[in-house]
Image (cartoon, rainbow, N blue to C red; front, side, top):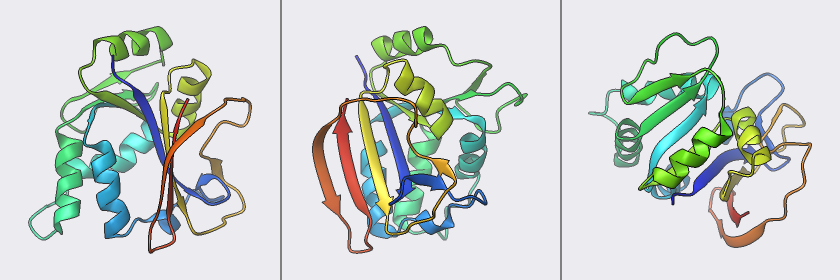
Length: 183
């Protein structure tokens, strides 16, 4: 059985986007990006909300010739994974190995976890909140950026309580901190 993992880059005060929808303050440096690549190496399928998928779809076509190795590595990981996008408005995917689902079905995700040979990752705070509420998330990786943004879109759901077990942490020279929890 595969784990469902939620990973997010967030401000220290818990936001993945500021009030203007921006997240440029969370851009990882090479060290953090390389770490994220290793975290995601075991993921075979990504579950995305539409907005995050549209943001990440650039990895399908970004020219890799002039990119540093850690960027090429991430692009290859992304291209080689399956993607399920939950959207009521997206007509067709813009990347290979991608399918659209109109509604989040917790039972279907449970079956997917049971049948998967590699871990699954859920991306997008609203979709992740649904997965948390359904009791589907097994691991949580928070990469906290050294910034306070004061408001915006929260990385974690506000309306639930869930005990977590800290299983690892790491500090980066850039000020980022990684926290790894199991539910």
